[in-house]
Amino acid sequence: MTDTPLAKSKITVIIPVYNAEKYLRQCLDSVVNQTLRDIQILCVNDGSTDGSLAILQEYAGRDSRIEIIDQPNSGCPGLARNAGLPHARGEYIQFLDNDDWIDPTLCEKAYYRLESTGADVVFFFFDIVGEGKARLSNKQHYSRYSVTDLSISEMIERLPHAPWNRVFRKSFLVDHDLRFPPVKSNEDQYLHWAVLVHEPRVEIILEELYFHRYHQASFYHQAGEYLLRIFPTFSLIKGYLRQMGRYEQYRALFLKKKFSSFSLSYSMIRKSNRSALVRTFQESVDEDEMDFLRNSGEVPTHVRGIAMYHLLGDRSLYWRNCWHLFNRYYLRKVIKPIEHAMKIFRRKNTGEERRRIRELCEQLAERDRTLVLLRNQPQCSGSHAPERDVS
Image (tube, rainbow, N blue to C red; front, side, top):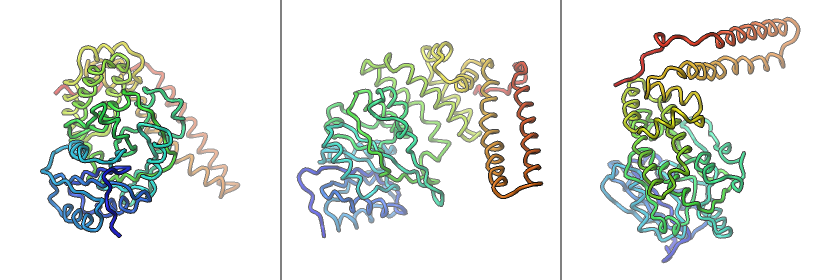
């Protein structure tokens, strides 16, 4: 049975599509089978060169709620999403990536929560699903906090900034002229900041309703070009905060996020791209930000260490950062697996086996005491620190 779109729909689902023929059918099936029937499905074909457009036309022929916007490739996922907004007739907006899918009840649950509370934005849980890998839930981002207990700053810092883990009231986006910026990376973080600094009314649905696919072609998996392009977006966020007269209010949080992003990116990016990342980071930091890095205690020590090393040549925190990274690696790669094995042995073995386990525990304890002693030794001189990237 073909659904006829109404002049005005309850929710508009905007799907930017680019070379997604492998996953597009699963994505579209999850939308056309929503329990809330009164929805508009806007598919923006962003210059696909595979069979994506043909799949869209096939589905549009069966379901008149699907509308296709065919355009040349914009080069930016955010611009493809923006292209759908002027055509949206829904009271609310949901963004959906073309290789993801949603729970059949997402639109219905989001719509009635927004209607009953008068909220401007409703968040929900999502799963990250890898190819052949177990699902990784994001419940930890929400379940430790009640949204009524979070300030706007805490929402900016703690809630995931993806555009697809929420549904927006369309009038809120229109009234504040909120759009994605013309950048290829990190555009979702810009919108996250831009939305929340306007202090919307926020609700959270404590259910996993969105399924995000993590695979080789994902932007977030490309630890090269993607990470090299994140800092221009921070400049746009800073400019928007200044335009809104909110920069001083959110300065500390903004700079903490920026420096933390550099530290994380440096640890993730391919070694061949590290010099380019450092150069891009150096170019994006002004004197005000350098002063904050030198004098503020709000940036975590290990983040300050790596940032000051590459910006100022300051080695005073470098070895502390190395110790932090070593501790994290040692705990994850050595201690945790041995503790897990010991639990299994305790359940299955007695007598001689347990005696050997106790000896192993004593050896590990002695080794750990040695590491503590090493940690308390004077720091290595600067001449032993590895050369920093100066290119």
